[in-house]
Length: 286
Image (tube, rainbow, N blue to C red):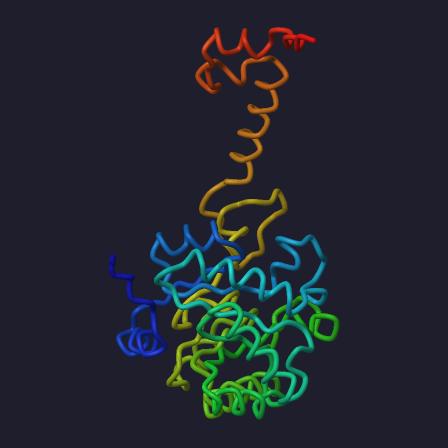
């Protein structure tokens, strides 16, 4: 049997931080995106609840259910053989330790992902500790936390001294509770760099500058799948959306003009067999 490629481990991620090697993470929401990202060498994929917006068409992540995450994360696992795969626990599925254990159990057992991600600081520290005590790898998420956007607003967080001190304290508390890494989203670059220097575990930035140990970006932003202007923290590496639209338009035009399908796109049949099939059925004799 062919040997399966080795999957990125938590120890490998920690070693990358120790060596000063940058960690590239990208979201993936289905089999093809995971397959492509894995082939491209991304060591870590996030099956993110951002699928609520970029896949399901919601305005926020809040409507995303545990079922949604399980269905999509399982497809990501089937597509990626090498990357470590993290799955978001969606809104209010970890409101208590019991909820978190039940949600994490389902996600880990039904998808095959290697870790889960939870948003928040001090209030979820006991939950993170409980999960990690039970053997569930947990990634934290501080700064702008999309599941709390109705409270926070979509803007840079921790810009004043008090909020910055709290973010540092939350990061250290999550590390002490057993988190293996922390996403820092929409925080000042200088603060993110300071947090990174105080932690032994990797930080993964998104809109948090270059001082983090790694970066995570949304699949659709990187590939330019939507016409909307990308966020400031994103870089469009291609305009795949425009290319896809052009391809579909060419297909529609070819169907309408009769240019597709051609004989080469069709199967042939022996003319004699066709004639026999089309001939009137013989009438049985009395």
